[in-house]
Length: 376
Image 1 (cartoon, rainbow, N blue to C red):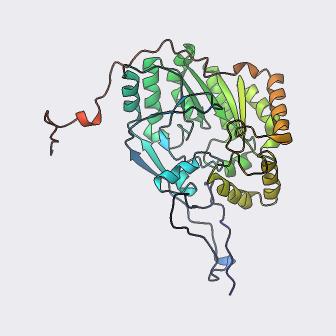
Image 2 (image 1 turned 120 degrees about the vertical axis):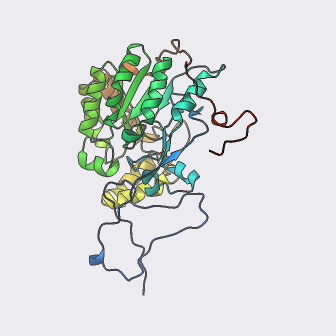
Image 3 (image 1 turned 90 degrees about the vertical axis):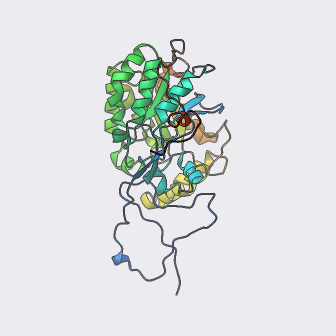
C-alpha cells in the first residue's frame, strides 16, 4: 500500500490551514493518508474554538532599534491575533510559548490584563522620557476579544490622561469606539491612526484575513475617524504579487476618497514559520497561481523566499520591487497623499504629564510589613 501525504484543507473563518510545529519543538509530526479514509467520508475540518487566557505581564513597552521602522517604542495588549491574517509576521512569536504559529496563533490568545497598570508605573518613573508609542504593531489591539476585554481602551485612557503621544494601527472598525478619547488627543497633536487595507475584494479578504473587518467597513472607519479630526493614513500591507498587487492604485484611490491623508506599503514578508504557512494557504486557495506568486516573490528577494536585511525586507529588491515602488509613489503623489510622511515624528511630546494615580507593584499590594503573605 502506498501512503500519500494529504494536503491540509482550508478551515472556515481561519487563515492558517494547519498547526505546523514551531521551530523550537523537538518532536515533528506530519500528516499523511493511511488509506483508511475515503474522499466521500471527509467533511469540513473541525473548527478551532478561540481561547483567551489572562496573562500578567512583567513589562508592557517594547523597544526596538530597527532602522526601517518609524517608531522606537510599541505596546501590544495581546499575544496572538484572532484576525488570522496568513501573512502576519508576528506568527513565529507563538513558538516562544511552545505553541504553533499556525492555527494556535489565531485561536489560543493571551490578554495582558495588567497592561494599563504597567503603563502607569512606566510613565511615572522619574527617568522616563516620553516618545510616541505605537499600539497594535505585533498583534491587532482591536481584535475581536477587545470588545469584551477592553484592555486597549484602558491603555488609551492612561495615555489620554497623561497627554502622551501614540499611533495606532489596526484593520478593525472597533477603533471607532474610542473616538471619545482619540479625538481630543488628535486636537492636541497627540495621536494618529493607520488602517491596514490589503485588498478591496471581499472574497480575497475572507481567506487572507478571515476575522478582520471587511474592506468596505475599514473604508468607513477611515471616514469616521477623519470626520472626528483624527489624521488617518492607509497601510497597504502586504502587497502580494498577482493576488493583491493588481489593486494598488484602486486601494489608494478608495482610501483617499474616504479621507486618508497618507499611505505606506510593505511587500509580502515570509520570515520563519510564516513561509510554510503561506505556501499551504496558496495551495488551499490559489493553487493555479501558487508557483507564479512564489516565483515573483523570489525575484524580489534575491532568489530566496525571504531576505531579512533591513535595507530590503520591507520593499524588496530588483526590477519588480522597483516597479511596485514606482506605481505606489506616483499614485500617492497624484492623489496628494505624500504630505503625511513622518507621521510619528510629528506627534507632540512636550505636553506629557506624569500619571497622578500609580498602582503599587504586585508584591506590595498584599501582606504585612514583614513580607508575610496573608492566608485569607
